[in-house]
Length: 357
Ligand SMILES: NC(=O)c1ccc[n+]([C@@H]2O[C@H](COP(=O)([O-])OP(=O)(O)OC[C@H]3O[C@@H](n4cnc5c(N)ncnc54)[C@H](OP(=O)(O)O)[C@@H]3O)[C@@H](O)[C@H]2O)c1
Image (tube, rainbow, N blue to C red; front, side, top):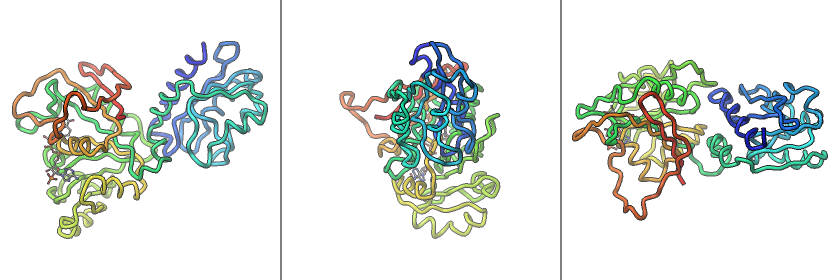
């Protein structure tokens, strides 16, 4: 096993913490001795041991004189657990290779501590992959003032998200829907706009086998208060919290009914304002699940960081709901191209994960 293969393994291990690590980063680690893996681990639970510590414990005495390959720079601070740098020094690791530098102001600087302790330190192996895996964590410690925004849509071959009658259940197959349950569990908030709430009356809850550290907040973009308080998102707000984003005028009219149902109100006139308000409320990541008008407007405003596009093998033709409604036209020569970071087969459907630039 070479370093790059070990880092790929560490990244893969880190995904096991998805939805469970809360505001912490996903971290995986592998202990390498003479090219063989002698221990591995990942950060599994918010408040639980970090990936490095788990991998070192698994390696035991074999860690002495070995290399540690870890996705993120080891932390140097006392948080919920003692610093990883101490555990690494104590274990007698010879060399540490990490992917990306930490950006948490309390935790970063571990590389320097290790060097001072006499350990050889290198970084940058698959760093971009590690940053992508932890895009929410990196966004949290940036100063963008808005959540990391991902857009997920299931579309037909002709980019429709519902048929001519507005029906969208189901465009994609079972495997894709299981993937969406897994995906939801790892986001802090899940949002839809009024059109979707009225057409589908979705619950937007996490119903798959993966239980999130904290259930995602539900967000309804309903500028003009078109959605009745009997809609599932509002009516069940006492069981699963919901924020309703309303414009000023609508907020004045609908406040009583929305708050009586137990939902929270955020007042914002536009999407940038809504995202800023969600950020203020402590939301670091938002998965938007439609519909097409909201999707098009978010894209037009440059407010989408990642796309999860699920393409299903059917055509819905004229009258079907466009996946990116109202998106202004762009010239071929200047339309920004998204970077494909993943392709996956989900039954008969195809998942594309795309990163904005
Ligand atoms: N296949 C899929 O993945 C999928 C996912 C979701 C929905 N769907 C389908 O898509 C259809 C609904 O999509 P759609 O494109 O018609 O509507 P939509 O995007 O769900 O909702 C658009 C509506 O929301 C209102 N809205 C309120 N606040 C908004 C805000 N801040 N930003 C943007 N819009 C806001 C808009 O009103 P104003 O114009 O007044 O702002 C507009 O009337 C349904 O048929 C549903 O079944 C499919």
